[in-house]
Length: 457
Image 1 (cartoon, helix red, strand yellow):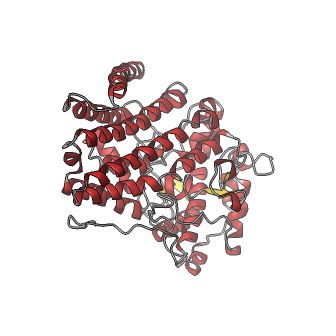
Image 2 (spheres, rainbow, N blue to C red):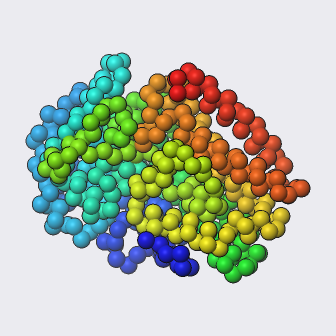
């Protein structure tokens, strides 16, 4: 746990000397990406798992129909040996444990949700998922999840997105055209598919999070030192980083088409609050009671929660905010600790209050909020175009209400922006910002009311 007295947090500023350290350590260079690129090749002890995963996607790497295309994965899983003992041989290598966690979580989700996928293809809705995870998947995923620091179900950072990319040419680094998926459910092994675009745009966004981390920790240090010049320079860095991240986020429209999303979305649903899992999932050989976990969600990324905590954005006391808080446990442990530290430190030194003491600082603070607004507004637009207009299913992959959850956070940002702007007669460079805030606030209320009425929420 982070203590109130902690003035600093250990941040990586270069790759760690020990490559076997946990894969996710917050850094000023790679931000919230793993400290080194994900492991793509498993040891030979896991060749049966590798073979099954290569045969699993609806379209395999060589373009042929895979097991999920014909609903054949369930039968194929019967022949997979339980490799839990082999995991113990490699357990000190935590990045490898993360890779195995990624791979077993893909297999677990595909196995459990395969009947829902087939039902969806027949136009019959999602129906019911499998309610038991066999021991040859349940025992290994429970073990590697514990070793890697995750829950034994697919998560955004540890498996589906941020530990699921490889570089086609290592010399070209993280440029988008050089990114490929390691695992996929549908057509994602084709880098031009919507499934690949959906995941890889997230990776592309997060690769720009290093300056965001730097700006945040520098802003906290500047407030503590009562150095306004340094504080404003740090906020400028935050605004610049967020602007770039939002620019990358906007490429999602072309790289992952709204009409394609629901064809692979089935496999990223969680267990919690989903009609497909009315009684949870029994993990054979792990627990005698059914288990339940939230599904992967981009909302579990750490960039915007970092801004929520740094800028001290107050969230309403609602059940929707309770879900937001529950999402915190679905992040890598070091990410959680860092975000907790930022929240504690920002509150202790009153960064918000410090920003309000000068118009120049308040303007930068408002510009940072504006980038958070831009991010959350675009996320709402994605939800509207990719989901609300395409399916009547009422729950998002992470188990939150699909219509009302994102507006809960977006409205909190809009309210704070109005409150900040109202403190000053004028804030340089912010006039157009506030015009847009007023417009979007009205639009959001109308859209939420419309979808609530249509869906009888």
